[in-house]
Image 1 (cartoon, rainbow, N blue to C red):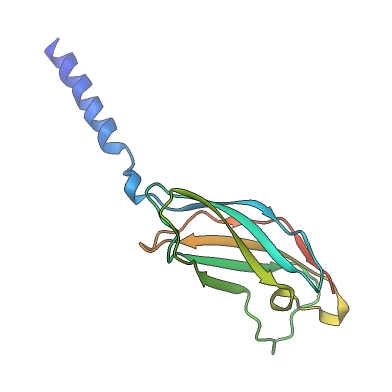
Image 2: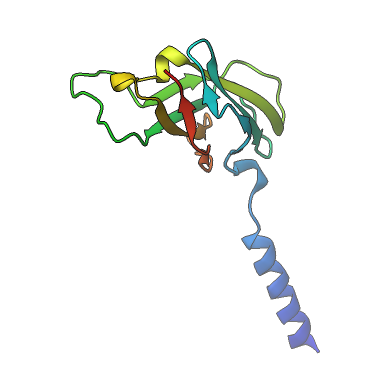
Length: 145
């Protein structure tokens, strides 16, 4: 009987020791909606949901990576970056939130030989502790010329 009780106690301690520390969890982002077609007078906009146990968006870094699908290559002398980074503004502490990210047509359009551009965008959130979120990816986005 004592060995059975000791075994159950050890299993309980093992399970307790293996549980995640909720205060050190990484941030998580998901795409709620995004603009799938962008005209020259519009912006690309994505609405993202954020969650992190005990987290806060204030000062976190949002990285947006653009992936181009077009057949015509970008000219080698083009200095446009495919990575956009921004610091998020001060916000009230919340373990869940919703925010939007916008990129202007002029910042995302190549328009090589008048061809519409097709991209997807990847979003990664890095908190002040250096913990990275999972990567949220849009479907294909067409940028019209």
